[in-house]
Image 1: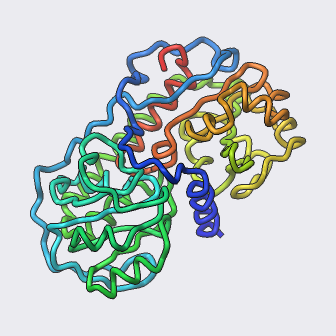
Image 2: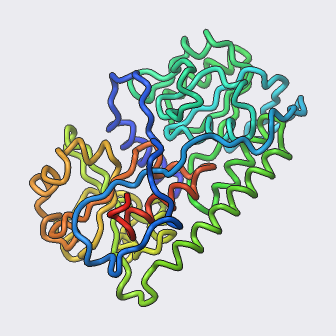
Length: 358
């Protein structure tokens, strides 16, 4: 069931992304403020107006300087396929959120990355050629031209025939679990490191990731209203105005874990919302969210806050709509759950609890 939820999330994201833009654009720009450096508002439920969650710092910080892979190494991927990697000198790490390539850079192997997916848009990777077309479609021709010695991916990109094409060409392809969550972020780091023959660097980065998540959630807990009745009621709304798509993300989508981690009340979970479903006007109004969390491109696709209130009248009938309390975050960042998970949580906390600083 959870795997099906993940694949539906991916399908929605793929439908919504622009199929024509190939110009490098930073999806996680610097310029945000850290929660530790701002003053929370006295009552976050009383705040009005939209805000954007922006990472305070998006620069790559390798956990070690160019670790030497121990090869060959054989790993069993999420599909039960035994994959032997003998050369990690030309790496492609590809997924819908750009998380896998970022992990490779944080492991200290960024110099060996030869290409990128469209969601890998942090500064250090922008000079690599794209191997995705039409938004998030893998291009077998573009990948083969780069002659990768190993490909690390998951099932969030397609078509699957490209993966088979690469394997037929003799390229080791390691397919990782597409499910992303705060709890599994260190496991994802370790899986990438194991596939590339740097398990020790993986353990260091996984521990750093977990430590950062723990420290950030502790900071967030200090600004969350102690009375559960005073906490922000939050829903994650996925919208693609051009396609007429409006979905609430519920249990198993990753949005539930994100909302809980930032100290909010997961309204979708409260009403038993499983996975993703089209918005129910009656359900949304009855849920009375204080905040609606969205992807930045999704909000833009409906014409911003004004367009959202016009196109989804039920939003206007909620406290979030009445107060224009819409929080957006870059599409490639908000549900990425990789090595930058703590930074994502921190940025969201600033937007929720100190919105005048976001």
